[in-house]
Amino acid sequence: MGTLTVTDAVPVDRLVAWLSSFRDAVHEQGAYLTELDSAIGDADHGVNLVRGMDAVMAAVDPPPSTPGELLKKVGMTLVTSVGGASGPLYGTFFLRGAAAAGDASALDGAALLTMLRAGLEGIVARGKAEPGDKTMYDALAPALAAFERSLSAGEHLAAAARAAAGAAADGRDATEPMLALKGRASYLGERSVGHIDPGAASSALLFEALADSLDAR
Ligand code: ADP
Ligand code: MG
Image (cartoon, rainbow, N blue to C red):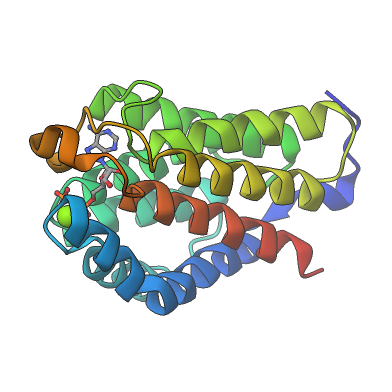
């Protein structure tokens, strides 16, 4: 892994900016996310995330003092405020990320990667998604791989997050021709083909928000 300077460590307020940016994005794109979910689900994905992220932003004001405590609060809030598959799945992502963050006061690139990886492992443990099943995993996994590649090449956090966001968007687009094998969309069988997965689309927003919040230095 490339050398990371001290200025690359992400403190709590920067993570709050990430969450706030994600909240704004799900508000802006909520109708689109729900439209995607109306094609292969039950038309609530945008509504679910708007409710969840509004509850999250209320719960983290004032922010807890460490990244670990912050992420734990986010995860618990999502699990309890969002019905449907995505609440528990995103909630688990943040809860596992919180455990990985421990009691560090800020997360450097390696710690951020460890946190995100633990989160993704939590999603897999909970939802059993495999690559190509047409879920959020198909945006998150390539995003993390790109993040790791970029950090290993010695790039700074903001650049790594930007690379991850690009990979997440590609992963989102790649779900369109896939046959859904997990979640509600799998009930549609072949009729799930030809639509972007809503969770993959929201996961791309999550990484775009991360890149934006790390860029704004
Ligand atoms: P619900 O499907 O319960 O209505 P949402 O509409 O909020 O919940 O979220 C749907 C998204 O959840 C899907 O687009 C998919 O990305 C994700 N999802 C569903 N089941 C799984 C699973 N088992 N593993 C990973 N992601 C999943
Ligand atoms: Mg739904």
